[in-house]
Image (cartoon, rainbow, N blue to C red; front, side):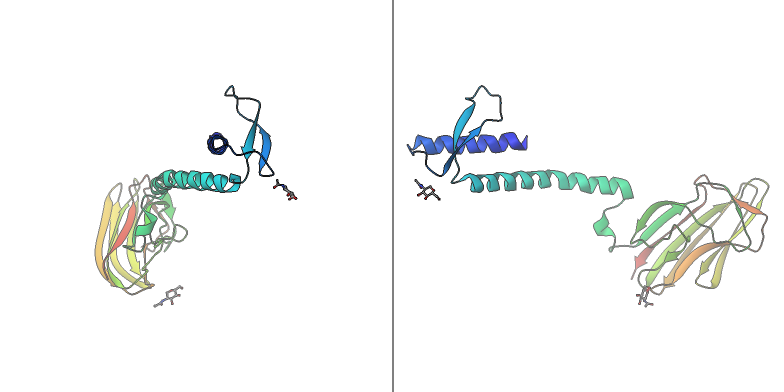
Length: 215
Ligand SMILES: *[C@@H]1O[C@H](CO)[C@@H](O)[C@H](O)[C@H]1NC(C)=O
Ligand SMILES: *[C@@H]1O[C@H](CO)[C@@H](O)[C@H](O)[C@H]1NC(C)=O
């Protein structure tokens, strides 16, 4: 495609040059045609403008390709991570959910393993902890569902402080919605209570999310 285009350009330039009656000299070279367009097997090419022509052709091709590719790459990124990367700094926000049922240990931090949104990389899928990237007013929400026949105590913690408590029993849900002022680097997470016999329901029914309301 690109090669054909370059060859065509060279050919046109060559014809223009010969049309003006110039003779071949050191600046011409015989190049076998790579095409099969019923052209003579060998053509004389004027090489004086070759570099320039090649440069223009390549620049134009690269430019066209970039213009065409950038929106596609951008869309692929949006499809992949769920938001435009440029918007990261605009508003930190995250949403995560639990994919599988889990027996929770005594005081275990609940790690919501499926990350749906993570603008600003504020939520850690490794630790289950949300870290405020800047000081501001935040909305934080969690819903936890207890597994069949099980109690479930899960609390919302800010740094080392237990704030509000959610509870479920036998396939029921508890939800916490909190608006809080967080300082930069404050952490918020959902932690299981003091029991080792409780089981949380996964299957995207237990969730953790938050976003910056205003700085
Ligand atoms: C062709 O190139 C050679 C070597 O660069 C030079 O000596 C000669 O004068 C050139 N001939 C013409 C017609 O430009
Ligand atoms: C927040 O944490 C980052 C990274 O650890 C650190 O560079 C920064 O100084 C911290 N800011 C405050 C206000 O604690």
